[in-house]
Length: 505
Image (cartoon, rainbow, N blue to C red):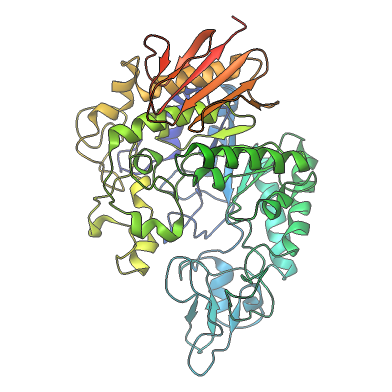
């Protein structure tokens, strides 16, 4: 908004009408706190203030209030696994003394780190300080891990939650929620030791922690929500975080990483609904986020899935963007027809692809920097949105913090609003229907008999969704076509397309 090329609170406030017209119920904001920005704000220096580059605490409170006025709730990002090296606690810890107990400082082993843990961003998970001790950082060296066995750490974050709930925040998104507690012995990592090979993931102590947070949220209002970023491959362990007295929801990364394959999607959907029902939690559906390759790009490749381990290998694989866009349109209707809640990542509604040709000098992700450029990292899905105009910065305001492509003029909001068949208008219509139709949102879902490469399911009140993942057209069911990802001609649904049909109209 102020022309510095970095999104800020004033900019969000100026686009609340856009968000309202899109049809969203809530906005999730990535960390807005004071930070050196070693990891796009996930290295927090002060959890009770706003970084000046984004605005002020008063502006944050105004945003929360103005969003409420148009029916939009606000979710803020809390990062409990680590702080920034610029946090006052860590500055005092570097000087020695009892503050070090709030982090993981350890002596090395013969000049080497205390154990063999590797950073998720690449390289060792330990950095040595002036007095020869080492501190743990599962992410960047600018993000020292907190010791959650220390009562002061627990008390601090209880107070942080109350601070933001007191300011009207409706939900808390918990970053790296399954990684916060560690085995206090800090043993070497042995990947061959089942069933708990990671001494820093899914520790039992986390469940009592989140029960305490749930009590805090419930003390404000039953609608206050806790949302976990929980990366766990085992769905049974995943949903333990969603028991009635723990988190309300968690992002469905199994669905996000699922390839464009009917059998794989059906298995994922069935498993999601079954496991969530067992704990009485709503399912969530996610196609993209700030950590993964945008699905327009993924769906245009021969390998359409996603995993962090294979990001480097898949980077710059040949991509058919026309094919990826067709599939992304169909995936939008599939996702919005399923029971539960849906998260739409910024720019997804514009059909933005991954930007894969960012110059090395412009990249900012610590994954890229710590891997000496061998891993492209996540910058490609974080490029600023194109609002209007025919050239960068497309109405964003100043040169973007990451460079925008020169060929995004047809993807701007202004262009797409004027195009009835655009991705933006597809999302707008689908979200409007999702809100209006009584059979969508929470509730039952039942598969129809269909060909192996076709997903067809019924929702209440005569609603049917059909997604054609085959190489041939299929017949559209009898009824009124509510919306389709591509024009329906002669009653057939083309390949890589989806349609919603009602028999009640």
